[in-house]
Length: 481
Length: 126
Image (cartoon, rainbow over all chains, first blue to last red; front, side, top):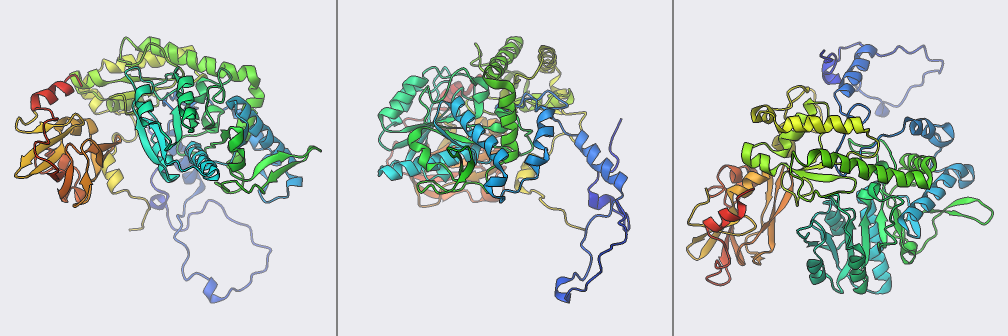
């Protein structure tokens, strides 16, 4: 069955005079505007009938892969199920119809939710204070580095370098550069963990922050973490935890307890907010007490009489990093998730996520190389290196073929420390049956004729777009012929 | 597949002596690993580079990777054709896809580099 009707651009399927609706006569008397305010010609909007419009969006939406339709093991992105209940609750008028400029007295319920969210995120982090403002993880990183810069400036220390392991997300060095630091790469050892000798050789009084993702992007918990954070603190530096992989350690260990001074969360990943296709995200940061004065403003405070307020008067704050109060809709979903699960449930999330990843690893590791695959946390990284060498089949070919089979691709070619990487994160919300089926499918794909793989996907609406042309000559807007 | 008359860095650059200067490019192996190349950022003529330090970046549809200076010295030439057509590097990595010309700080600066056979050994199995 091909659902291609009305899937052209709306401008292409438009016909003059078509309408989605007819408006009743207006009861408002008409007025004449000055000619300088009126158009000379109607705006060039597409004219489309309602049924064509409905088919357009419905048929296009069905071409998408989504967690509600497909297993989505996109490593590092934590594509877990987003409870439908959250969508209903976050849409309640008391939450959804608030205006951010309303007086605090009239938004006490929302402020109470945000206050509790700050407290819960600080508690899970094992840190003292939290700002909910950053709009997503990368902005959380940047905000925290700006906090660190303000802290060192306040102390009169001139520290210019941020150290970042080579397995880190590319956002880490990018955030460091935007915050005005020089980024220095720390090598991974043979075991995929931080190379302590390399760290030590680069650690000195110029070091402002060491950024670590733990568990790291290979899905390994760096057991040297206490030694690492001690070394950084010895030189007067701060430790930043990239919280991308918090889904593996919730309620089991706390970054503050293993020496991190700052961290970010990805609320949309770890605590569910529908994401993918670019957002919206939410990237709160939690920090140790000495950094609290520098957090973005405003923060939510609570008076002794129980009144909640947005506190703006914080002289050392780095200021606002996002309009109003961050992506509040995502934060409310995170609060709902935490309140629903409670401490034991939150811990179980991580236990199940780690169990699922290890189960899938056990099913796959005799069929595809997993370089650091003795065990893993919430994800693992397979390598198609041998297939590429022997059959010219790349990680990309495998990823594309999985689309034919109804599975979203794993993350490919990341982390950079693994050749032909396929990064697989099943999350805790998938059943054993789904994992069994995915493993069987992936194993069958690995054995397919390379010619079939090279040309895949065969069954989607498009096959392989020209990625070079898309990068070099992107068509970003439609123009009438 | 690696020309015998060139020297190679572990970081996948080749070096060809050319009078007093050295011509530098990316190896076929590196280009194959990168897949389709979209942009190349090179140092400016007149700038100085340190051996083993990053001197530019190559961006492919897969990732952005550093280009390291195999020898230290002054950049005396840059392949301007790459700005409009980065795919030259994929099509002809040892010829028209060269990257920069370096005037070395000292002679004999190639001793630390690998021969074609040594480089082939490093990349085999990948």
